[in-house]
Structure formats: structure tokens, C-alpha cells
Length: 392
Ligand code: TYD
Image (cartoon, rainbow, N blue to C red):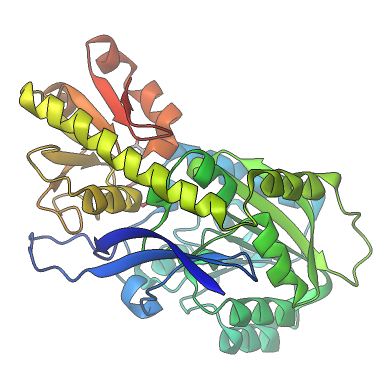
């Protein structure tokens, strides 16, 4: 049974950055549910994929050095540990991972045509289609089977999970490996990062819920890695149950026990999370209102989809945060979805004019603090809501 626990109000499409602010931008209600049977946490309103992921999708994995470094390291690990003849990536974005492989060894799947174009132009085989059974059949005809399928921050964006795993299972060779990584629900609750919820994040997986889902397809997790990316993610190494080549690492059981101990299998913990979210909103608004009263200038740092959830849930307008800065060309000179807050091109001189920066890209805190060392010495302060709203 699906039980409601958190209402994040009316929200626009998180990656819909308009060139001109429109107060009537379409908004959808963002309500979060826990399924007491499958233990899956999901949002209620499902927006069709073609509306969310199209030829104007602005998110680029390669723009952050943290992500480039993470994908480079992963490519080394995949080559040495699994040495696949062919790796298929579902959601290959601008090629941050696949470009680390030889052309003949990788296939990208990326439905956002502007992104698929980037790897196509580099002569990497890229299907600019949505991941589904039709596509799996098409690829199977050409390649027969695939020995490694990888997907980061994509599977949780697809509403029909049964179709996703059915298609993966169909294409994966007998001894093939599936690696997926996504934000960890445990980290999300521990850090009170309710901004992980937006229209694209249809699900946030716990290991418990993923295991239940994989069971239906005779797939099982045999190893797990804690990652710092996207504010705390889990990388799952998955195989067919019939494949006895890999022993199940004890880390899998340890992670599940951690999640059970925290209460992720029970509804109660989600009610507690919802009440922490309300407290977080009140405290963040208190900080921003006080700075406003003191005539301090506040800018947002990192025009993330996550920040869109915060701005719209807390009803933060341009009196509290006048602008955002971002390095993504596709976002510059647009407006934060749902808000009359313009995104400016990142430059250090611009930042100098501000007293405080609200960390929209809190998941890149280390990279950003390192980059802004000099400005911080000169007095720039940051505001974050993670794990509790505060100035640092
Ligand atoms: P991310 O947190 O991955 O986004 P989302 O919540 O949308 O999934 O994206 C980080 C954003 O922050 C991206 O738009 C680029 C921006 N950014 C900067 O502008 N400067 C920086 O130094 C870093 C690390 C990110």
C-alpha cells in the first residue's frame, strides 16, 4: 500500500529554465509516498519522459571536475575488474563515462538529442532513444548480448521500472554485469536533503527496495560501494542469480542492516523526515529574512534542479536571493524554474559583489569551497541547508 508522507507543494519542471520569467509557468504538485509492500519511495505525479528529457535538456555531467574524475576512475575499475567486450550505458549524457573507452567497446543510450549529438559527433555509437524493451530488442539484433550495462542517475528517472529491468535482463549476457548508481535514500534522510525530490527523481532507492525489485527479475546485488557523488550515492553491482562467478560481498548485508536499523523499511521514519523538512524550511527562511533585514546581498551558487525544489517549497523570491550563478551555458541568462530569479554566468568578479552565497550545488561543496578560497578569505560566506540550515 502506498502511504503519503511529504508534500513539497506546487513545483515547476525542475530543468525547465525559461529565457523569460513567466509567473504562470506550469506547476505540478510534488507529493512523496512510501510503499509499505515494496518499500519503494516515489513521487506521485509522473510527467511523460518526452516532456522532461528532450533536445533542450540542460544538465551536462562533464562540466564538473568532480564528476569527470569520478567517471574516469570508474572506467579504470570497470576495465580492470570486468574487462567487458561491450559496455552499454543507459543515460550516457555528454559522454562523461563512455569517452574513457575505445569506440568499438561502448554504446551510449541518451534520449536527449542535444546530448546524444555530442558523443555521436565524436563517432561513438549513441542511440538517441528512451530506454525500453523496443530499444533492447533493436540492440540485441545487432549485438546479440551485452556483458556490462551501466547506468547512473537514470533508472530512478523512468516511471516503468518493470520495463526497465525486463529490458536489461533481456539484453544482459548470462554472466553479464549490471552496475547502477543513484542517490541513497539513507543519506537523503540522514542529511535531510528533501531537495533530492523533484519531478525527474521519480524514485529514490534504498538497498532494501532495490533488492525486492531485482528479485522479481532473478537479479541480485553482489557488491555495493558508498559514493560521495550527488550528496551520497550507492553503486550496486548486480548479476543474474544463475551466475555463480561472483560471491556476494558482505557489504551488501551490512548496508541492508544499516537501512533496517535506521528504519527505512517502516513508515514511521518517513513521518519523522517530513517533520524535519518543515523545520528545515522554517530555519532557512529565518536566516534569509534576517540577512535581508540587515541589507546583506545573497546570491545562489549552482542553479541545480535541487535548488528549484527549495525555492518553490520555501517560496524564496528575488528579495531573499537576488540571482544565481552557474557555469552551464544552457542555464545562463535564464530564470530559476518557477521563480523570478535570473541565472548569471559564473565569474569571480560578480561573486565579489555579494556577502553570502546559498549553496544550491551543496553536493559539490568541497570543489566549490576549494575554488572560492580567496573570496572566502575576503569575507564571502556560504549558506547551506544540509544537514541543517546554517551559515559557514
Ligand atoms: P547537480 O548538483 O549535479 O545538479 P542537479 O541538482 O540539477 O542534478 O549540478 C550542479 C550544478 O552546479 C550545475 O548546474 C553546474 C553548477 N556548478 C557551478 O556552477 N559551479 C561549480 O563549481 C560546480 C561544481 C557546479
